[in-house]
Image (tube, rainbow, N blue to C red; front, top):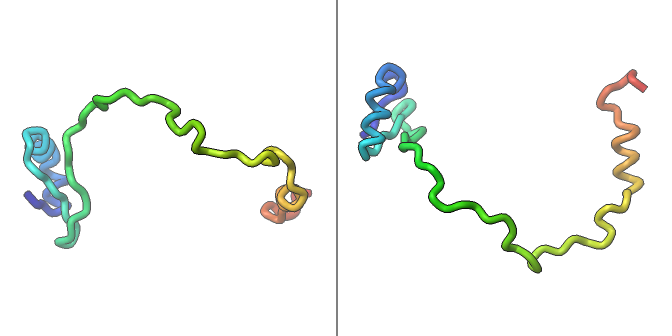
Length: 83
């Protein structure tokens, strides 16, 4: 089902109910599809942190200060007159 933005504003509750019941609801703006209403679903699979061990390498000098970058931050003209 495609509805225009104005109709969606005035019929949001009805459209949300239809989407929860399985209807494909697409909201259009000037005849062009903009958004699709989908029912909320809890994530069924718990997230497990990690999984890329051994695949990501951090350079040994990652934490070393870079004079050029530090100078750009410390001597920035973003806020002129606040020296």
